[in-house]
Image (cartoon, rainbow, N blue to C red; front, top):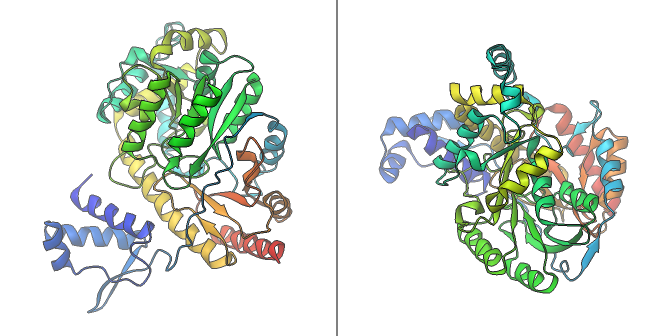
Length: 472
């Protein structure tokens, strides 16, 4: 990134976090130049960029002022500490399917969707790359790539690990049909029906469905909306229930948006190493950070191959291509064999196309644009929630990803709100689908990965009215 882009991102992050609020005056160009030790032209370029993004505006003979960002962002919800006391036999899939089935219709405003808008991705470039790469593809590659995946793609993934400071060889990577297959392969590699799996509370509903499908039991450990899982509670749960694995999101957790610090990730790996419990690390949102550096995965602190790192291109580049991967550490051979005996291989043309796209360059520029868009969307969505929802509403302000975790005022039932919202052609993700015990009955997850157009603004206003009516 150029220096002025870094400065613009730093200021934008301060606005996103509420450090700079609507109406605040930015330092003068001269003062900012001196304090940050950059040239006045660099400051001006940064201010011009922020102005183009709609975050600040210039006033004649007065300077630059913040025009985006809420004046008063409600505090984040508190963690719920009642979880983790017992093993839970899961029965959540029907509820999840019922909720998901209702949000697939195109006429529904997708605030409950798990995906960002498909319009945010370089579809045309990918399509051209796919067309040319398929024509150039070696016919034998459809056999050679079984089952670990395309060698060139794995090399590019290994290069990205290296850029982030991790040493993962390309032959230690298995390409999968999206991250979810990788996560399931890891789960099957270490657990058998009846075993316990440690998860966060709340957690991504797909983790609950996978645990239920295999016949496992869940150990829920509370997770803080800002800095992630309670490590003390986690270690107590490991000692009590002897889980076969932990399934956690360390970066921008779904639905909370929480981010574990490097210190906490290091401590997390020390705990699993002490107890020899593998960690299935779901890191599909790691590239969608709003700061200046990609957050480090827990995998970086693993010295014994216990961390199985899973990620994907689905959330950051090519949603429909279903190309993910796993670096399973000491479980590599088991995961490879499970892959070969289940789906054999991820789509070879999709793998080759993404590898060629990465090779041509432009991926990091796309990611910068995507992150900028998501950060702006978050600011606008938070403003809209503050504007339309009643007093008593609380919400998170994540440092990446595209989800808001919203605590509704006391007495408002999320499942009831979900049904009323659907009747108004609005989808939300109600809290109970993120809990093995169907908790979080007064929480919802909102997706800000779609543009806040006039219809979405109206939909948030309708949601706010429904919340107010239910709480009356």
